Amino acid sequence: MRSILLTEDEFLIRTVMVETFTQAGYNCVEAPTGAAAMKILESGQPLNAIVVDIGLPDMSGDDVIAAAHRLRPGIPIIRCSGDRGNPSANSSVHVFDKPYLPIELCRFVTALVDPRVV
Image (cartoon, rainbow, N blue to C red; front, side, top):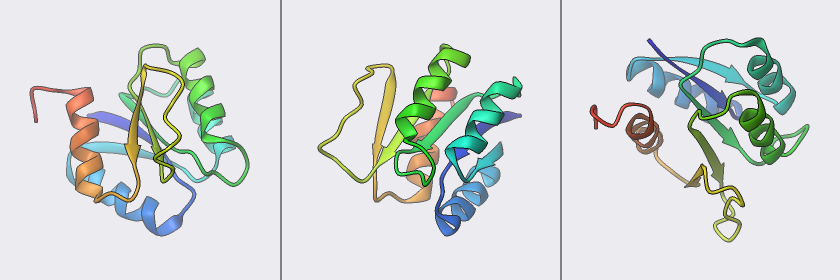
């Protein structure tokens, strides 16, 4: 089963995204804070993709992304932000603009993880 780390602090958004990814066949690992995401990244738990909201309450999502690159090189990382004027400085990070429909993000992740499915 494909596994995704979803780092999102807003409970309702996270809940809907977990349901959407689960219905699409993912094991969705939730992280409501940057610190929680860091623990999961450091644990070595198998992951196929990482979705990170930039506006986290305890740290920048970009800090989580930097750690993900260091700890999980080569894994697809999707940076979600409502600030369309602030693209990622790292070309290996995929940017997904808010607002979005949950199924759109799920399809985007699936295209990165398993392009044969989409």
